[in-house]
Image (cartoon, rainbow, N blue to C red; front, side, top):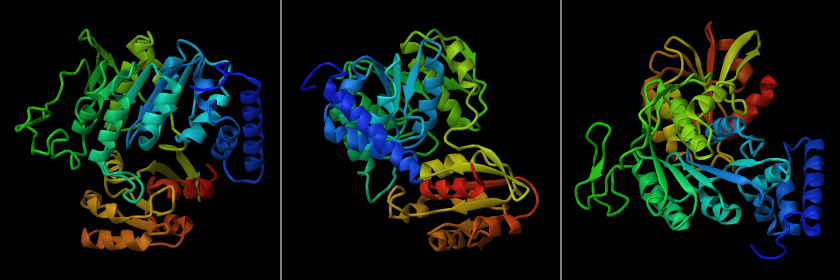
Length: 412
């Protein structure tokens, strides 16, 4: 960190004040939370501000393709057992948004920060984290993000020699390759439902062997490490072999895996698994995800899925047929403009569900569903889809900006 080492130097205070003012103007204009513009203004005035704001905090960074917002929330709840927490809970996960979040944490002891995969190495350099959680890597935003092997290499180089305790998923070969450059890793057997990005060895390019839950490369010997924490059905197994029950209000196996990683992180800070897991029960929804809302006298459950791995996990937790399903896909800047990923999603898992299709790229999605031999109807609005849906709770699955559009429409 260059410049004045005082985290609250006059320049830093001015930058924080200006950033908060810019954020307030953005909110007043109805342009969202203002966290990104506020952070940009603050960093323009003091480029070292992120590092200054992190100086007094025990920092946790959370990065992954899927589940980082939820895991960040679960860790934050667990660490509140040990002191005040500041977090970018709404998911603004690039340096500007992170800076905005930390600017509001002068009284905090811990910072739990979700970080976009591309920015992990830089944010780790600035914030000197005590712990870094790495959950998974899979294809996402093909027009913006690097190919997964390149992202793993980027992580590996950025984390080499890091003093942080790295809590990493032992079941994802790309994550293991990335984390293996770190001297202090806690391996968590969190599982890997989506395996399509992990059939070639990230170390040598050879073909991975995947018997059961194990994996290894027959050519170079790169293999699954022995985990010290594990998800076992509805329990977290700690390094001593004790099993702690998971009670979550969030649905699905993926969130149990998130809870297992979160418990391992909390333990790094001295919060016992029992306490951490009990606190995680308080989380009912995360930035609108999993919320059940009333709209047009119907119950709608809002689910976010941004890429093939996320859609696969989401399909595993929706109610069985004939539950109606609304799918909405956009391809705006925050989503990634390339929708070719739709062809990697197994939509045959929706067989038997009445399907209604929305969003800017509804016709792209319609073509994909046609090829998957699914019965669906294309709709212009959420209102139209809800009117056409048969009785029962409706599962609504959308990618990022489509999800935000739907939340605004239902007043969530």
